[in-house]
Image (cartoon, rainbow, N blue to C red; front, side, top):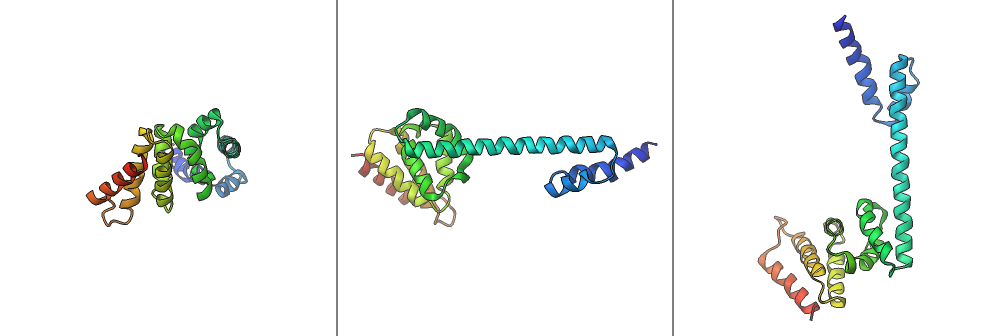
Length: 187
């Protein structure tokens, strides 16, 4: 009897659970003549999946709305704080120019926020590294006493300069160039 249950578990339940990981598999499994307990399980899996999908779509919609509001009202402090909390999780919402626009608004006030810093640094690893480095330097010109912007510019500069190196590490000359850029902009 135990061998039979083990066989049923391996042959029926495991493939059914694995199939539920894709929409094709869920639709396929729900149409099969399966035991009612398994159909119930698969139905619950489908409901949980749909619920998570709806929650994610609602969160993305809120972030899109917040992005539009922030771009149209760049001085609103509450929008900037909400954006700092929300945007790093939704980087895919931004085109390159929108990312620069949003960061230009947010960075002077949120450059010390760890999640915003991680977002900027991870964004600078791609093709935007030069643009983000230039943005940080421009913001230092506008806010020469901001330590948060200076340290962020240093980190983004390191990523930007090391991008073209074989070992992906900045050299001492790169560090000196970054420090010179920051010092020139903060006078």
